Amino acid sequence: MANRKKFEPGQLVKYKNYDSLGLVLRCDTVADFGVRFVRQKDLYSCGPVSIINALKWAGMPITYKKHFQEIKQKCKTERFWGTYTKYITQTLNSFSSEIKFRNVNLITYKQLKNHL
Image (cartoon, rainbow, N blue to C red; front, side, top):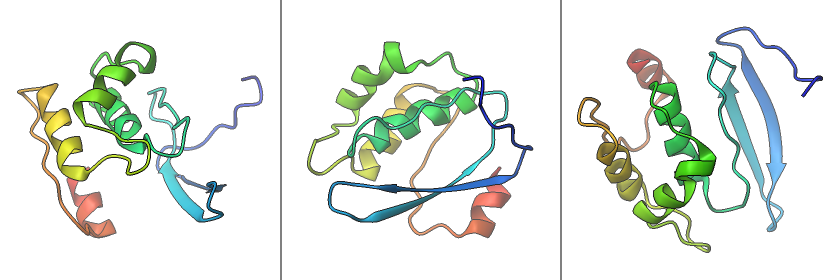
């Protein structure tokens, strides 16, 4: 990782991935905040990976190696369908009684920014 690019906090990093169907998935991520986030390693586990990253961001001692299979099972991730948002919320809430997660559909950038 000697060539790891440095980003300023809050800087948007834009890149594109192509899945097996040829669809373009545009992903805008906020740069490193001192947390080592994990990447999705297949086409359907974005739910468990986002849970791991959210919990890491919240300061919880979560690792991909130790927790991925447990989280994948808890949120009922399926190879074809992926993960339903209601299971993501339930799984997040099962890890902490101090932090309350809830599902919000179609959130705007302004709403998201106000919650950070």
